[in-house]
Amino acid sequence: MSEKIETITLGGGCFWCVEAVYEKVEGVTAVESGYCNGHVERPSYEQVCTGNTGHAEVVRVSFDSSKISLRDILEIFFVIHDPTTLNRQGSDVGTQYRSGIYFDNEEHERVAREVLAEVNAHHGGKAVTELKPLANYSRAEDYHQHYFATHPNQGYCAFVVAPKVEKFRKTFASRVRKD
Image 1 (cartoon, rainbow, N blue to C red):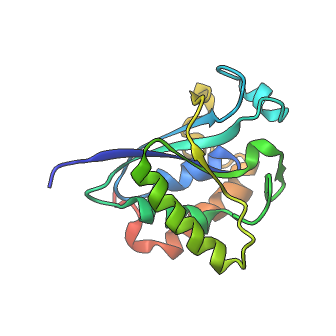
Image 2: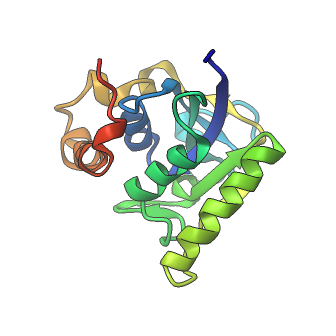
């Protein structure tokens, strides 16, 4: 079977957490931290942190759909973040930390709607994850890329990111990259 690369953009709080997990997922070919769905062109991290740009911190996940499905990508997403907290993940608070799935084609929207409906039912109708077309995406600054991989002992990484990576490893052991 030949490679079929697809991309979905996910917001699940701080992009360092989400990026760190997807970099460990078998079948994921690339992960990029960025910003999307705001009204400022090419915002800086500092601008996004104010909450005034309308952007979400996101990761763009590229995956080989011959090895892992979008459904699997989204099931991981809903285990590693809390889809029931509006504009917050843990101590990260603000609209930039909202839960969101940002799609760029109808098939991804369809699958995301199905999975989100299941998650919402599981949480008693309390899921607040937004599902919207991807808009105004820009790549985050270089120092945000592969942040956990290059700063595993930094305080936030050790106490917030590492437990999310470990939760992924335990919950989805068969999906952990072998390399």
